[in-house]
Image (cartoon, rainbow, N blue to C red; front, side, top):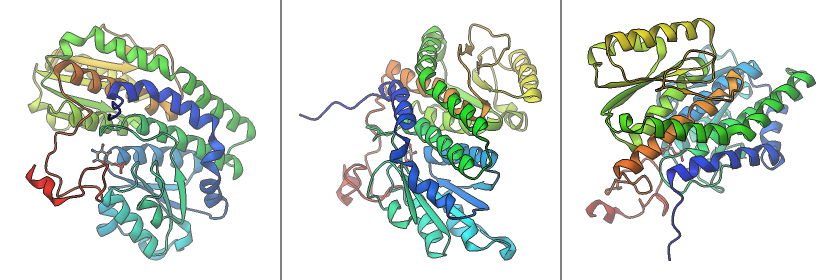
Length: 380
Ligand SMILES: N[C@@H]1[C@@H](O)[C@H](O)[C@@H](COP(=O)(O)O)O[C@@H]1O
């Protein structure tokens, strides 16, 4: 008998376990990646991935740029392959440029083609995947294994969160080795990660409570938008992807200020607006102003998600725990993953199975797992 797949909410509830595992078992994945940085003086790093892995790459680009003081670039892999001027003016040597490809399954065509090109052009490449012996791995000068464990269903959640956590640990380790972080600063950042891993289950259960408290209102939602800023702009992008990938109702994502530039004609009382109120001086003040404005002019359905000290309404989610701004994407994605999972359960959308029947054109190389092996599937 076929084993029952873990549900989407099951993966989200299982995330704290794999974070703890990433923290406890770092020696299983750290060595090769840290060696690559110990033996090279990278000055520019490309972070590439598609779908959820694009947003993973975006968050990790921000973490590496801040902690390691390097130039970081995150663009879609296919732009990298066909359009990017990787080294304008040849100011850097090839050894100073590193290209990292993230793909949980290791077989997204876009990411594999980009890493292949980087490899053939002589840049240093690192492949990152959960699946071992993947196509992606063949194009990496180095390899880093993700310890998120294989996700059993299409919409990726546990792997998104774990990858960000794992690469934060890698960034602080490299920064310590290179003398960018003092021992003391390293210990503080490491402790922040340990605290987050131990408290993430609180974030999951508070997100579930938030969903249940607003359930009847959420069930009337036909269109929505999600906005964030700073470290949580990619969180808004990933939240949109997850929500659209599952619930399938129109959803947009914006950098918070960008949301004031264009979509207003499309907004009315039917719109649900989600705002991620993460750490930020002027941005947080601006958010408070926008919440009042949106409620006054467009819709009562405004939901704020925050760890910050700001006045909240019954529609909002205020976490009882918090973390550093740099680690906060790990917290702020959870309510949107939970919303996607539970609203689908409530309206009868099966997130365990893909609605796509014809797979003769696919974003992944053919495999049993992606069910895109045979051209016959075009007739099913
Ligand atoms: N629908 C899925 C996405 O959820 C996933 O993020 C993407 C990348 O997958 P991978 O991380 O394996 O490269 O593939 C598909 O498009």
